[in-house]
Length: 253
Ligand code: ADP
Ligand code: MG
Image 1 (tube, protein in one colour):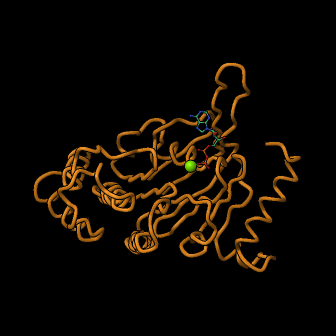
Image 2: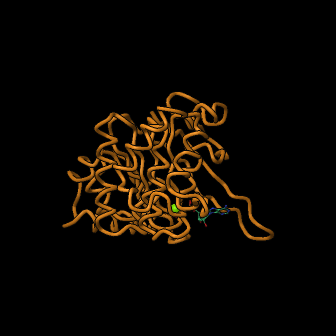
C-alpha cells in the first residue's frame, strides 16, 4: 500500500552551510492490515520521510507510491485515500471542533448525510462532545490533539499516517490513540506512525524501520527484531543499534 524505493532528500544549504542529507537511500513497504513504525531519534529524518509519502514534498531522488499511485504525479488521488497527522499542521484556532470536522470533510468532498454520520462517529470515538462548539484555540493540548485526530480520519482514509502523535497527550489520551491504531489495523487500513519511543513500537508495530541520521539502520518485522535481540530490553536494543551506527559513520553527524 505504501512503497518507498531508494529515496533521498537533500535540503539545500541556506547561505554558506552544507546541504542537509535528511533522508539517505531509504526503502520500505507498508502493507494493509499492518502497523508500520518509523523509529528514530530527533533529526533522523522521520518527518521528512512522512511528508514525502503524504505528497507534501517531493524526494530529491527515488520514488514513492501510495495505493499504487506515484506521489510525484497522482497527488490529488493520493490525498483522498490518505490521512496525515503531523504536529506542524495546526488547527484554525477560531473554528470549533464541529466546524473543523465539517471544513475538512468538505475539503475532501464529503457532504450531507455521509458527512453527518462520519462526524457523529468521530465525535463519539474521540469524546469531543463536551467541548464540541468551543473554539479550538481555547482547548487544552490533549483536547486539540483529539480534534486533530478526528479531523485526520474524517474521510475514512485507507492509509493513515501519524507523525509523533502521542506527543502532548496524557496517558489516557495516548491509550485512546493506541486503540485507534489497533482499530485501523483491524479495519484493514495501512498504518504508518513515527516515534522516538521504542515502547510505542513494541506495543503496536508489526513492522519497523529504524532511522539514524537519515539512514535506515534496521528494517524488518517486529518478530524478527525480537528474535535477533541481544539486549535485555528492546529499548536497550534500540540504543545499541544507534550506537553501532554512530561508530560505523565515524561519529560524524
Ligand atoms: P525527525 O522528524 O526525525 O526529527 P526531520 O525530518 O524533521 O527529523 O529532520 C531531518 C533533518 O533535516 C534534520 O537535520 C533537520 O534539521 C533537517 N531539516 C528538516 N526540515 C528542514 C528544512 N525545511 N530545511 C532544511 N533542513 C531541514
Ligand atoms: Mg519529526
